[in-house]
Image (cartoon, rainbow, N blue to C red; front, side, top):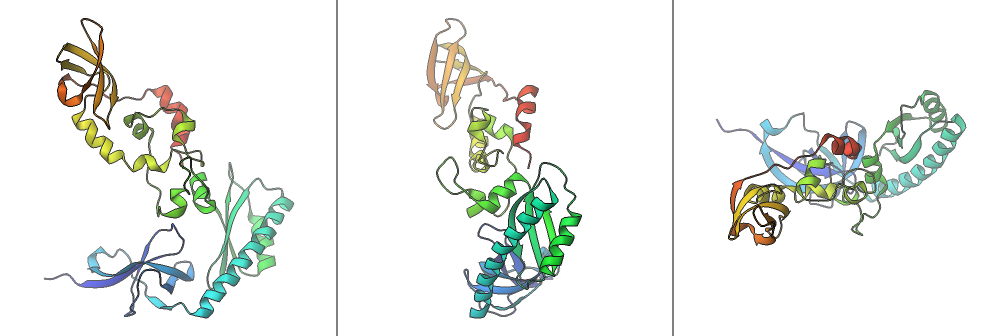
Length: 291
């Protein structure tokens, strides 16, 4: 029996936001169109990020909500007015935080499209009892208030900025979700385990370590690692240094102690080594992996 198919489109609500699926409800939509949809947070305005396509109904994990309508000119004007209200709410909330003496740093404020809720995003080193703050804010704005504590990666995604490469943060421009990045990736890419060299402005491992990891993993399968025993044209030797991208190995001869450079294809692997990270390195750098 043929699987039933369903039409879906992808909608995102921030420039580098996650893409959510909705039913187009028969509307002819294209990437870049603004649409009004119903979400778990209420009615929202998003941008079509993926054109209409068909998928099996079995691939849909939860009931598919539909697009209510295309955004009108008035909707777009309302969004501009909403952004002004968010700026005002940010100032008011900062003042309230100061008045309550709370150890928290306000990052962003967001009204839902239908103005049924205001979300305040903040960072803090520990837990914050903000119950009185919520009551205070509710008395001012007369609507539902939600405070969300976010991590340093989310802070960077919300605020944006420039990375060490001179370009805008990846998380703020195109990364919908954070990918897991580990110390092992830096080690396998022969990078210095100096926190200043492998961490981004958020103080965590740079997201770009993930981009080339798959290629490095493939190269590691066919390239002797540092510490490997190899046979060279001049005899046996121990690999002291490896450049995975160029395939060049610096090898120390076990008999003469002479050091020479060879291409990986010019040597024969006798006994490979392993890339390891000692416990001291892991403990010293563990916080770089934390969200």
